[in-house]
Length: 467
Image (tube, rainbow, N blue to C red; front, side):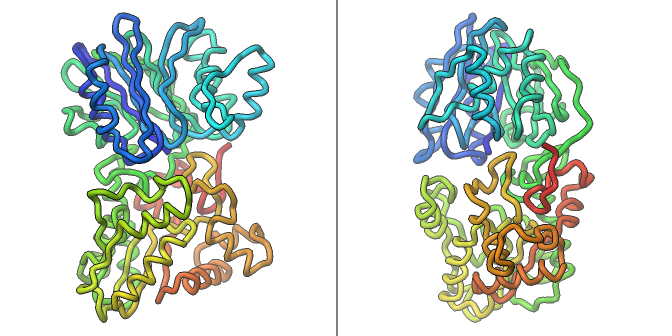
């Protein structure tokens, strides 16, 4: 996915920009960048963060930055920000999203006389594509509207001009943009965990397709929000940091509520509840409360050296990292029946290895409870599953075994407690070697988030979407 941060102040902004971008580090693991503007001159720095952390890469660059306005990004895709000079003026831009029709757009724009400079592995930089579409407008607003009209997928963005930041949320609001304020400054981010320690209070949530201009003294609305919203459910179940809020709905509270609901309705007899850290912790605490059994740390995450499990560039290495960073507590597990709460099952390989380790440590029974429904459809908007093929999903491989085709009767398999749903879940349980396996329903997820179902994107669970 990715996350960004921008700040506009009356004095130098680089320190707040540095820490604000760092608070988005949980949203991506490949590239990071920052840009400021001072006296019409843009300064930019971009680093690869696949094998190190944002702070260690950028701290030495800070002395080179000046200015009262700046933007930065943590990206799981392209190198950004990029700096553009066109008939609209000079601006830097960062984006979060996914362009599904980038090849078609490339052909169209090249035929019109555009050119593209930012290439990696013969692939156009998506942020440069967004900048090119903006440059077709008569002003920034019509240019961004051109992005909304042409891009299939999603895109939220920050544009840094000489004295302000223009923020534009994805046309269906799949990713959030939130504005914070304090005396003499405004900041804007996708992750509200960036605000408290920098002294900002949330003052405004952009709506879908809304465009605003942010300066130190205030916000100017450039385009009204649209009514249709499809914010990604995985912001709460997986990606979001526990203290973050989207649409005023807290991440950790949502996870707690989803676990509480599941625990109240589960009659499985166990000795204690544990989380698969980190994103399973909130759910496990709620599940423990709802079921009335103790919460203990049957698995502990070793945080000093291991990054997130999808950091390496090969699946084999990702699985090794995922295994090495989670340490079972043999003393707690021996001869115990344990429920483990986790955020999701994508491929299933990581969980299968973890389950084997738990039994090897002496666990008598291993029950898995998943905070979201089974992933039936790959994400086509934000790269959550990052699947290159439908068959990377364990659900599709199971459906292939059961039906002879991986795409047959998908709606039946996506319907909670239908006969085919139950057969799929049982097959996954057997494949992973679990004592029992249960998933939360879409209804529980939506109820725990606290938004109407029509406002939450649940495409990966049920195939629903607004293209």
